[in-house]
Image (cartoon, rainbow, N blue to C red; front, side, top):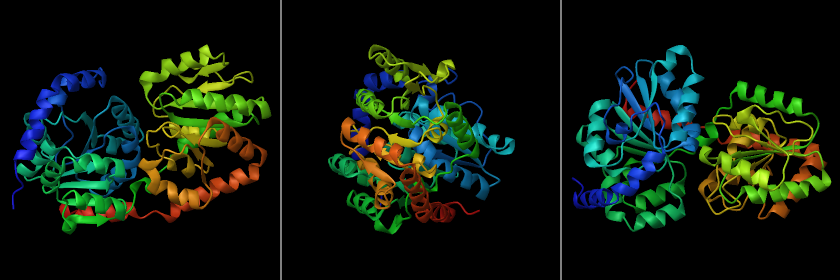
Length: 430
C-alpha cells in the first residue's frame, strides 16, 4: 500500500521556508574544487562508470565506520563502481583520504560527490543522474525526498548500521507520520542492535524488512601505515608520557588542558597531543593554547615536538588514527561536554587504553564491551581524568593489559560486515 504523500509535502514546504538558513550552512560546508550546484543535484561532473552502487555517509565518523563496507563492496562487486556522498566538507576530505589508500584499479571505481539538499527537485535530479543499482544510507541518514526519488525510480534503498539513539527517537516521534511514510519506502534496514531495531519499528518501519546485524564499527581496519607512522612519532618523542585527546569539541579543550596541567605535577615531561574534531576550530584552539601560556607546536606547520613542548596540536585532517598510535593513552572527545561522544573503538583497536567523559550515549553500544573488560574508563571531570592518566603512566603493565583487552573485545564482536553484505546481496545479486 502506498504511503501517504502529505507528510513529505509538509516537510518539503518547511525546507523551502528554511532555505536561507540551510543555504548559509551549505555555503560554509564547501570544498573549493566542488561546484555548489551539486547541492541542487546539478553539475555532478563525470561519474564513475556504470553499473553503480551509491553509499551515503553524513560526515567524518560515518566515513571511517563505513570503510570496511566500502572495501567489502569493492571486493564483492568487481564490475560495479561506488559513488560515495557526504553532507560535510570534512567528510569529503575523509573520503578522498580513503580513496588515496586504495589500489589504482579501485581508485578508478570510487568517486565522491556532495549529497544534494533534500528538496524534491534536487533529490530527483540526483538519483536520475547517478542511476544507482542500489542506494545505501549509513546509520540515520533518512532523507525523505531522496528516499522517495529512489522509490519512484525503482532503486532499492538499504539503511545499514541503522542507529537511532533514545534522544533522536524522541525527536523523531514528533515526526512519526513523516518517518513512517519514509521508512515504508526502504527495502531493508540493518540495525546495529535490538534496541535500535525496536525504535525504528516504533517509528513505522516494518519488522519484515528489519534485521539486527550488529555494529559495523567493530569491523574497523587500522592501516599498517598509520600504526607505523604513529609509533615512529612516539619513538621521536622518547620515553616521556604521551596521551592523545582526539575529536575534541568546543568547550572541551579548556577542560583537557586543565587535566594536563594537573598531570604535569606528577609527570613534568608529559605531552598532550590535542586533536580538535573540526578544522574550522584549529586556529581557535591554537589561540587558546597561546592565551593560557602553553609551549605548543602545530603539526600543520610542521613544527616538531621538542622536549620543551607541552601540547602538540594535531591540526590536520585524516591523521587521527596515526596520532592515536603516537600516544600511550587515548581520550575520546565530545564526551566531557554533553554531545554524545565519538568513536571509542578507534584507539582501542590500536591497543591503547581509552578514557572518555560520561556523555557517550551515541556510542553506548560499542562502549559497553570495552567497559566490561576494563579497556574503557569514564571520567567526569578534569581532576578524574588527570588521576586516570597518572594511574596508567605509573603502571605501564596495566595500561598494556587494558589495551590488549580492548583489541580482544573488538575481535569478539566482529561479524556485522559479513551479515550486512549478505543482506545487501538480496537487493543486488553478485
